[in-house]
Image (cartoon, rainbow, N blue to C red):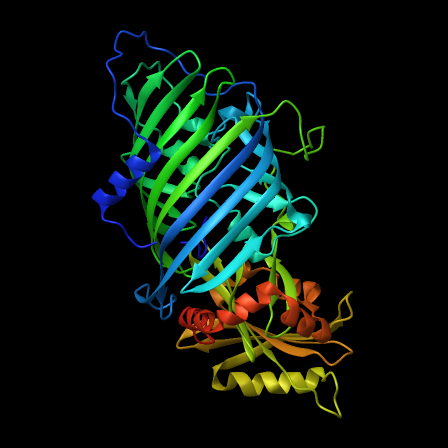
Length: 500
């Protein structure tokens, strides 16, 4: 939902008072004479234009080594402003599909086109900006999973773009905040944990005391006030949310058209991301549309009975320092990027599966791309007494012309069985890197073919292009300005070669 777009903790009383004032939450009037009314939870409208503004301030909590301890050793102030403007068309479940025990709502997916998606943030006084490229504005969102899963129709997201789109509130789910029973002004009810999981884009909710209250009801609309706390998790990382907000239900279009909500979230440190304390204000406007603007006129066919194809869930990871980019499974993250070393980590549900350390390798005059026999010898020297056996070794050339030397080894580190996969990758221009994958033997199946995915999808940058872009790009200038803080964060969340 959030990566590093996060504000100082407010005293609970101050937070709720300020949020109530900003959102205009009113007290109830005496309207008990009105007859109870039933709100339609799902109207016929399935095409919307949505605008969402998100403002956040807070602190990022950095550990020294998240694989060894979740205790923060550093706090960095951060604030962010993000704007999203998109149209979305819902794909609804059929009657039999709704009987499934895992059915979250009648909305199972959406086509979404982002007219604009941008965030400007400041981490420890260093600025950074990210916005969607044109090639990934056209997207599909699956809403039948534990949390919304989004992927591009034509291209793959870069990591920054994917994190940008993980917003605190799901526009596909806000109608689930409506009451299921007849209500009148003053009626109180509790949204289900199932609904709140969807609305807040959480993976799970352990406890919630959020209560909703109908504060006004007319022929045109219904206004609802929300307040309370949630204890949940995102991809296995515990998070606590305190919230107050206000929702408007338009009775003519039978949908929620406005939401303003203040959140204070405290998320623990995860194995792939730092923790944070953040206060956020989200304002959302939803306008029903009669026809599409940028989406195709005819709805796309989406098979709602099958999971999202794995081939659509890659993410583009880039090492600016070593000069390469690669498409990888979304469980992989670039954790460190320094001139002489990059490190990626594979994490699923806050469990570390594997790690990949990547280093440049100098070119030898008499052996420009190296030999497999020489590489095997290097592997034995590198692993030393930890090595038990070489399982296999092979050599190949990818479709992109990358020569790959690959050695698989088994061994032990501190008494734990370990699998290493070392790969020497080179091209005819002299670019050479060594990638060392490390995982516990018990994680081999979960690791899958990540090594071959890297070999087949890696792309070396043109050095001349890279140097030119560094001189002319405003984004690159921001990155260099933030280099000290970035390296400090990267160093603090990395670990030794062995993944535990």
